[in-house]
Length: 68
Picture 1 (cartoon, rainbow, N blue to C red):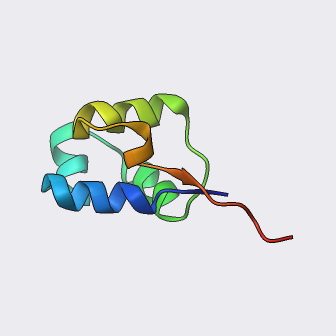
Picture 2 (picture 1 turned 90 degrees about the vertical axis):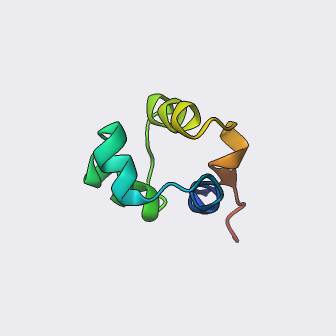
């Protein structure tokens, strides 16, 4: 499973909120909802977040092995 928990931590460190992503950068609320639910998003979306937050991919997402 891909987790976006690191995204929220990085946003907090950078002083960004969900509201600022929507208003300043034009991110759709639906996209934020997908990330909050750890649903799949495109690599383009990940790239946009890296640019906005000036961070690396590992600061946004991580792989967590599912229990079988």
